[in-house]
Each structure stands twice: as C-alpha cells, then as structure tokens.
Length: 344
Ligand code: SAH
Image 1 (tube, rainbow, N blue to C red):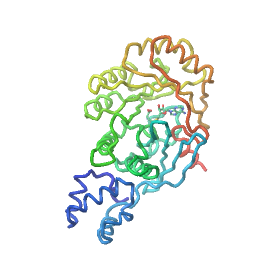
Image 2: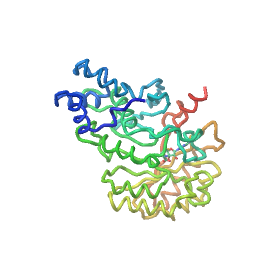
Image 3: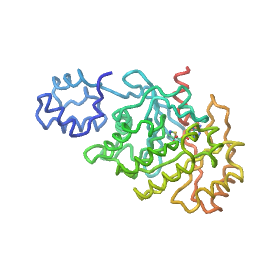
Image 4: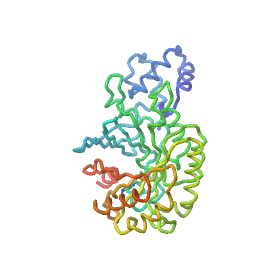
C-alpha cells in the first residue's frame, strides 16, 4: 500500500508541498481538497504534474464506498473498500439535530464479545488515522450542502476497539477536531470502549474532551466475562474508577451502553445491581435491545421487558434511555454487513 495523505495534518501537508518543490499556497489548496473529501486526482486546482507526483507516493482513494444500503428510517449503511482490499463498514444516522456517522477503527476486532459480529474473524489490522478520517470526509462530501456539514456528529462505534488502536485513534481525534480541517467539535464525538481502563485514563489526559461511552452489558465481573473476555483483564470497579478519572479531567458525563439480552442481564436483580453500581455518578445509561446476529445464539429482550427494565432504572434514580434501533432492516448492528459481505 502507498502512503495515506489523510494521515497528515496541515503542517505536515505544508512540509510535503515544500519538499516537493511547490509554492506554499499549494498546501492550502491540497489540504482544502482533501478536507472536501476529494481524491488527489480530482483536486483540479493543482497542476497535473504535481498531482502525478503525489500519486506516485500516496493512495488516490484510501476508502472507497462500494455499496450503500438505505433503511426505511433514512439510516445509510456503507461498505468501504480500503486500498489493500480490506472491507470495513460505516453508518450514517439521520436525526433532527444533524447526521451522526459511526466509524470503524480496526478491520475486525480482537475483543471477542460474544454478541458482536465484528469480532467473528478476529482482528485483521488497525486502521491508520487517515483511514478513519477518510471515512468521515467521504460521507461528509456525500451529504454536505453548501457550507452545511454532511456529518455533524461522530461515534467511534463501528468495527474495532478504538482504545486497542490508541495512537491512530488519538491522531484521528486531533485531526478531525483541528480548526483548519473539517473541525468537528470534540463534544460532538463519542468514543465507545469495552473498558480498557488504562487507556481510558490515558485518553483523559490527552486534552480532547470527547464523550466517553463504555460498553457495560453486565452488572458483575464473572457474568460479564461470560460475554466479554475483557472483563478478565479489567474489573467493573477498575472501569468505574477510570470513568471517574475521565470525569475529573474533562468534566464530561460518561455513558454506559447496556444491550438487553433475554435471560442474561435484564431481570429485576440486574436492575438493582446496576442502580447500586451507578447511582449518584455523573453518568447516563443507554439501553438497547440486542441486535440479533445470525452467527450468534444470544436473543434480544422483548420490548415489554426492555421498558420494564428502563422503568426500574428510572425509579432507582438513574438517568437512562432506551435507544430506538435504527437501520435494523439493513444489518445495522456492529459488523453485520461486513460479515454478510465476506460470507457471501
Ligand atoms: N469496541 C467498542 C466499540 C464498537 S462496538 C465497544 O465495545 O464499545 C459499539 C457498540 O455496539 C458497543 O456498545 C457494543 O457492545 C455494541 N454492540 C455490539 N454488538 C451488538 C449487538 N449485537 N447488539 C447491540 N449492541 C451491540
């Protein structure tokens, strides 16, 4: 694979332009073209000879949309092909306040959660920061209208564990929030982790106050370890300590994801335990009925059960919502589309 130009920040682009013997103003043109989601070959303000020089060193299109599925609710799901032929997926969810894009951070995942389709084939490789950024720039270009951005919010909830690809993800966060680039505010970005407590603390110290979301899904360590192997490495108490540290450093309230799995984690007893764990903490609980994955045997709680569980949490003083399932008709759950594409 050649280099990926979206890995470079504005200063690095400037150095590159000068090192290739071009006048400095070309840096602005090149950076603007990239930020607008163009391929190098499409940035027509640049002389052809300069574009050719760049193309001998850099990929023209590091992530290419090869398939788009549109749900009845407006959700769009994309299959992207990377320059080395690997496949990742992404989603754009339409809300009244804007468009939220879900991006992938790795090809596959090695965390091994039993309910998740992304981890079925293990981790193939990390994405570079530019490959993560290019997902956003490409989809933004599809939906941008004049000065209005096509992507207003980002969630790092596609395939991969963001904190297992720490350096690339932090570089991505710096570049996507940079004033001279697409400039999406950190408060409009959510990073979701299965709970790598050490990296959560490191992230708190980076000075990029994104929203932190933790996939909890269970109320006790041994129960959690049955579906989430990471629970053998970090206990819930250690994860909660890291959340408290994150809050202390960033002032950002944190969020827990809790997928309701029939017969596993949504009895009255679990509600009580969750309340005991989280009451009084500056957090919110996002409930979601499990998206059933055909390769997995776990089943979703039914709607009645889900509302009952929500009611118990609210009665116990927790801030909680039951997330509506967007894009369920197009394989909206993590890794489903890629899994079906690779399997077909
Ligand atoms: N690795 C990160 C981010 C990717 S997964 C993490 O674990 O948080 C994004 C979210 O989708 C996580 O909360 C994950 O637990 C959840 N998820 C995965 N498979 C799911 C499924 N089948 N149904 C509902 N949520 C699922």
